[in-house]
Amino acid sequence: MTRPARVSFAAPDLDAIAGMTGRLAVVVPGDGKLGPAARRVNRLTRGTLARLAESERFAKAEAGAVLSLAFPAGLAAESLEVVKLDRRAGAEEARIAGAALGKLLDDTGMTLLTGTLRSVAEMVEALVLRAYDYGDQKTADAKVPGPVTVVTSDPDATQAACADAIAVAEGVFFTRDLVNAPANVLTTTEFARRLTEMADIGLEVTVLEEADLASLGMNALLAVGQGSASPSKVVVMQWQGGGDEPPLALVGKGVVFDTGGISLKPAGGMEDMTMDMGGAGTVAGAMRAIALRKAKANVVGLVGLVENMPDGTAMRPGDVITSLKGDTIEVTNTDAEGRLVLCDVMWYAQDRFKPAGMIDLATLTGAIIIGLGHHNAGVFSTDDALCNGLLKAAETVGEGAWRMPLGKDYAKQLKSRIADVNNVGGRPAGSITAAEFLRRFVKDETPWCHIDIAGVASVKADTTFAPAGATGWGVRALDQLVRDRFEGKDG
Image (cartoon, rainbow, N blue to C red; front, side, top):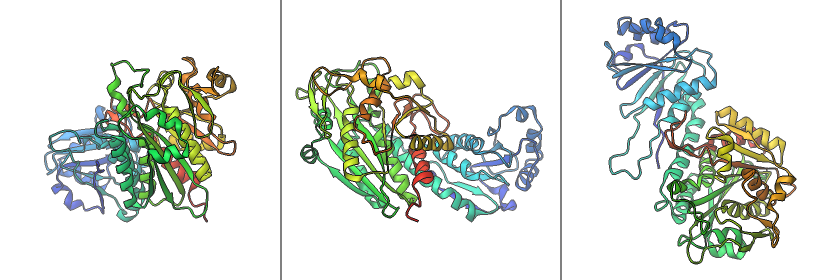
């Protein structure tokens, strides 16, 4: 998998600045006042840094901006990156600066002179997140970012403050690699294999094969995959770090490729459906992050892995299938398949684990992209406390999320003449009726959130924290939610 840049921490050594190679970054506050390290850089460059800090270019730059000076005289560094950031800058500004540095990071590495900046952890987190490049299918050598050295007055404390963020970044990278991988590489079997390997970091991983799923009665999930040569699977990942408390359950849609089935999608854009396992990818990355930082909480991740293909044995429009819960479902559109995967896994999660809360994630509907674009995931919930905690966690880490409505009038659109429920409710409010379908499979006692990540899991242009492609959205928000609401309940 793609590994985050290696980060080390060191105490200031002014005499070493002249010989630092690669990229040298220095933090300068908005008022242009230079700290000790910046003054040494200024002296070595014969006043160049001071002139920049006094320039109109620097004055017009926004907080968090990075101004580059190539091949600065007096320094061994190939470039000097001047970071405009006040000592008391908030997390958002520090992340903007870190992301800008991460975009610049190459194989020569970087030394970051932080001065007295408070938000060093947030800067380092964003730097590591942005320095990502997926190259598994390229014949050229993969681009590996060089090492990052963070120079700070208290290296040990700063390293401790950054440790969890770097662990979570590895979880984000794991998600990005999964979502970026083509479907002929990331088959259901390969996906399950990669998840099984996480037993090495302390997760208890179990794979339920098709025979197991049939015995349990997961007929809705199996119906989606019955037209594919790839076997359908459910993978269960458990992290037991919180004593006897009931776990938080994370459930992910893992459609490794979605043709739409018999309700075939148009050819244009179908290649993007390699990312239709984004919900499962996010759950997997979150579980990796939680295990790597040894969270003091109980969390279980469950992912349904299927492929939706138009084989002669495929599910047809008009079929009626019986879910694990026992509800019968009329399949009007085989391209509304993700909800059929989720409903069985969600019911299984509740029956087996009796969770303290349940959150499902899925690239579920194009309708959510129409409503929220590529800036926010859509959040639907039956529990205000869990939902508000999730929204707060997403805001804390800088991931966009917006709560959407539910209601009986929307559920009425799913009425079926011949079964308990239809799998689609028509074009109006498509993301809401999809959420209402899932709501049928949530027990009254289970706090629940559904997150539609169709617009944020993979994007065509760079974002603040990621290059074009898979973003890893949700790994950090879910990890933050676990910190805020579920850690330490064992006392």
